[in-house]
Length: 367
Image (cartoon, rainbow, N blue to C red; front, top):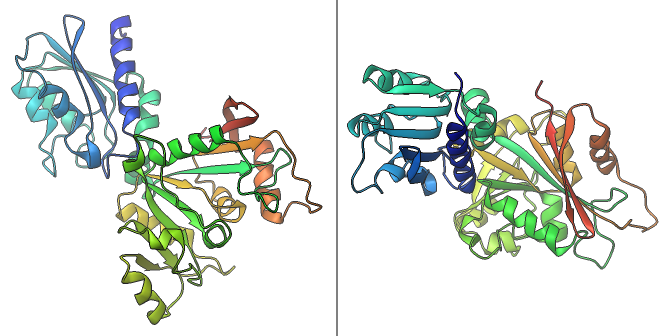
């Protein structure tokens, strides 16, 4: 299928719309929708917060007088089943749209081409596969959960120029304000954020998004804490609002009850043969929770444990222009993490200047 310049423009717009709500649509993917008539945009829509309403409904329901000769550009195949939301195909058929252009088929077994079939059966022209790779970036976590039963996993690293991930004594941060602001934006477009117990004990983080306008998009907080050492007076525990989960191997019921009284969910996870919690069990739990995008923001220990399994999609590496000269050498986990730059498994996707800091984005080689 050869697409026109107008087709490319409208689908590109739909993809950029979808990017706005990534990490904010619950179990559903963030989908963008653009509706045109006579090659003019008459409405747009994005999947709503926690997945309701769907993008097509948002776009269609904002049109008072629905015109004839309409083309709908949508980044993912319209749903054809009833769940928390009514079928989008029914609405498109009811409005007698002329053409639907779809970037990507929905791999969900309850859709998987059925939406396309229904539209065609009702005389609607359907074209699909346009800008599929670009659209997939917004749907990647959802697709991963459907196909592989675990979410999209991204890692955030902050280091000195010479690769240290722990600040010098007496300093709180390695990177500058711009890097930290970018990091907060990353939190806003992920469903959950994970750290290990060492980060909790050393940094006492809050793990929320503190950018104006995005505070309500703070992710669910996850702590990997084998022996359940998370302090009850830590910021994460004190500020918990049914949004904190601790993965542990501990069976100390008295201590577990202390957390549960504060609304914190404690999930028992088995250990592997090295004494660490089993990552596969954690990921299976997150899949059942419908977590589509996970950001790992812990230290080098937890980051490398995920990286070595080759299940990480992107690495966001923030580095300062300065070396850390504390008289110590890199620990073994920092050494493993720094090997990423020479790894054949990851490609440098982008490099962004943040004044005296640099952000390098590495993507996992999928081919």
